[in-house]
Amino acid sequence: MFNYNPRGENLRALEQNILKFRAFEMIMILFYVEEIKLIALRTIRVTDKFSDNERLQEGTTKLYKKLWKILVSEKILTENEKLDIEAIIDYRNDIAHSTQELVFDLNLDSYSKSFVKLSGEKYQYGVLKRLKKYKDLIYERFAGGYVFEMNMNPVLFSQAERTYLIELKRLDKKIVKLLKERKIENRKIENEMKSIGRERIESLKPCHPKNFKSNGQFTSLGENCLNSLFSMGCSSIVISYLMRRPLKTINRKKKEWLKNA
Image (cartoon, rainbow, N blue to C red; front, side, top):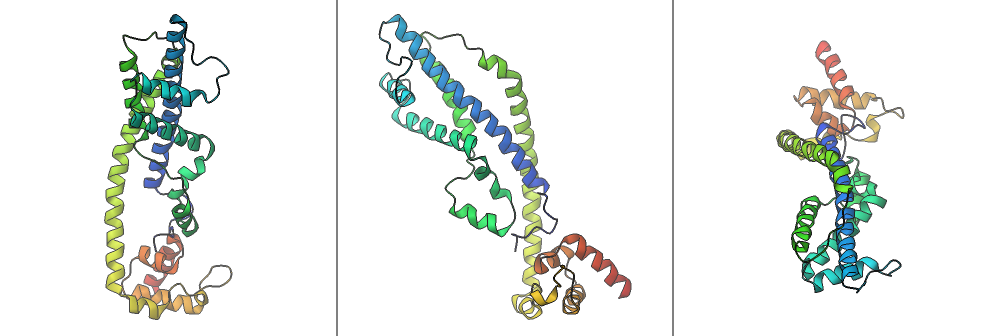
């Protein structure tokens, strides 16, 4: 039932805010992944120059696989942390190359909902938090025994980072509030559906093709079904879901019905 959007093609406030939240997180993930890779690679390269043992020279094949192995061998990362960082880098590649697969689950049509179940990609919450932890952890574990190279990227990104983090916190609060409201709304609709009863709905056949003309307007059968639902005291939103017709149309029809009642 909830695969149909009575309010039209535009996403509702909850989904719009989730989409914004994901967008800000994805930008941060893209930056943090590159920063962690840069910190790790440059620190090992610069440190190696001082020991005359340059293990990761320009042109090294499978550069980052070798880099992460070095970090594990030198106890900068554990094996599990290495595997998690590699998984996050794969996820970063999905963000860069398959963004649509990380946002389309917010669509409300049945095709997208069914395709999400078959798709291997889905948005992962919590990745940004893990990345921030690894960034701090790598700096901390490198300190003392390694030579750092000056890196201006964090400085250049700092104002954007601060803005995104503030916005993420604001959006998170908004999403929590809207999610509570949506759950209450859905519960009311489900309770109303139960009170109508499956048998009654099946006998009315509100979504039957004979209820509608080819241009989407109601046939006489459709009008009778609609008036029956109004007489039963059904809310406009429930009728919109049952008949799969826009809420605006149902509200207009209800006004007409009330005038003539």
